[in-house]
Length: 405
Image (cartoon, rainbow, N blue to C red; front, side, top):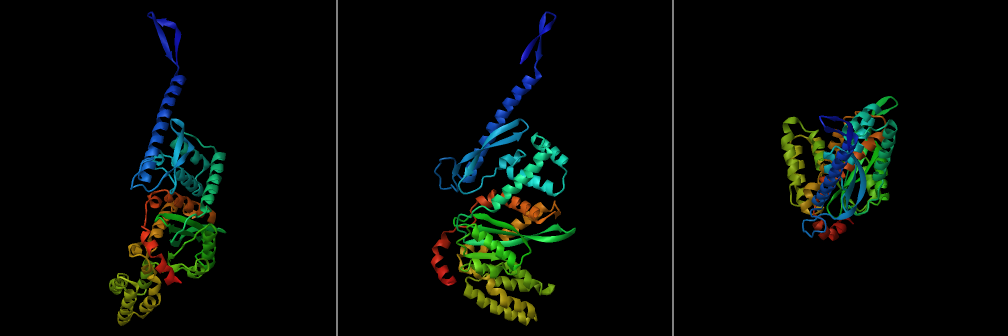
């Protein structure tokens, strides 16, 4: 690392520093430290997601380790080798790496967003160099985008391996170009609560529009991938959905989203009477069981008719039973079964992330970006924290099946 110069000054040997060797040595020390630190942080994060340390016996444990996989990771200090933990139940996607400016799902998402938003390849090169210290070539950008598309589609088509008693269905509308015109395309999304009470992203497909044929194809897609054990489907009253549901899951009950039902009624009520009518509707769903709710509904219909709101009364009378299916399930689950809010929140997040694109060049582009975001969400607390305690459902299974039959 040092060399002795031939010249002497005042009888003292001049020492020259070999800058390249010194830099290489320092970079190596820093790289090793970064590698060791990141691996330690990944282990700590896996312990936190599992609710216990590796091999530790704890009643708070929610998941178990399933080994790890190696991954090369570009940092300013150079390329490091990570040992990324794998979990049995959940997909491990690290918050630690995101803080270090590179998280796999976020990188995929960012590259897809840049590509779809029309960012130039030169600009992508600049961004990747600024973030990771590595300049990505144009051919690499193209190959990586294709690789990302393939990986996302593979995730979309993965087998569904466990039962999902509760399933939520909805569609999100995005703009796409078609023949030089901007049109809307529906991306259909399904999430489910599995037998252990955890939420999962079950499927995401391009639906063209939310019609009977689109829903039929989506349900066929889910069933062919292994979706089973469905006992309640929660959704808005979409055209053709209920009919298609009967073809593929005839034993499942259907719950019409209460929030959407309220909105449908509200459109038929003058502003001055909205608060009163909404309070009457909420009183129906505040009852202790289905029979009491139906009795209350009759009173509400009569009262709304007395307010000279015949159309609103008719909608309530014809649709109220569709909003009460959740009452056939454990009361502890009611607040999370009577609306489509869990999926609505995901849809808001999707729109927030896709707003930067504006108009998509085609339906596949919209589908890939939505799927990338959903895949990311599945690895966060959204998918790794227990959503419902399913013990009560197992206790009442016999009664529910008799009622459905």
